[in-house]
Image (cartoon, rainbow, N blue to C red; front, top):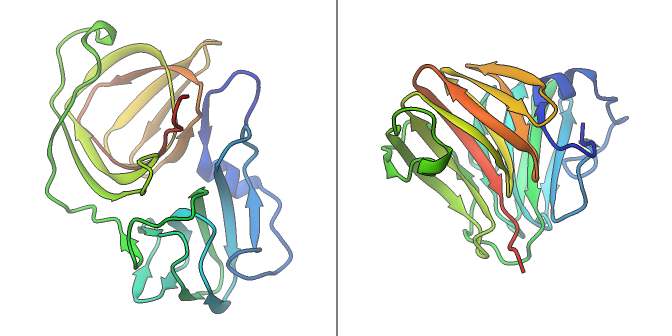
Length: 232
């Protein structure tokens, strides 16, 4: 959970232990993850065989299904599938019994798309910038990226990324980043010395202002949702 020292949060563990809401619809059947104030929120959705219509959310929302299945308009999501619901886009939804999902929302009024955008894990990746040279311990990795959704203000970005192994010393995260590991594993260490290795299938959050290192000894591929606030 969010503390004075920002760190990494195991979101599957959060989902397994959080108190569930008593009923509700897509907007209200939620348990929030405690985070620092800002225009980004992360919620656990508990949608048990329910359905309905929403006239449009007050922000861009990344959704990943943990269990069950969830139809958002014409987009069908099974376990571990992801999509982005742009702000203000009306949609109908239908959830199988026992459906659980995580939702990361960026509060914004102007959408960057007029329909729900699935995250394409099989999309062709193109070369992207490696970590800063002054932070690297050892060789520079080869990194690749595909962006499925970029908010109209450039603050919220969702897509897929991969990299060859690398070790990076601790840096201060300027963003919240939700990650779902599709391949490989990575070990983080925060400024208190707490260490955690996340592996294929894990879903976790690196908090804004966390000071963490990165150490991956194998190829890593991930789906990501990043909220990076504009610094005045």
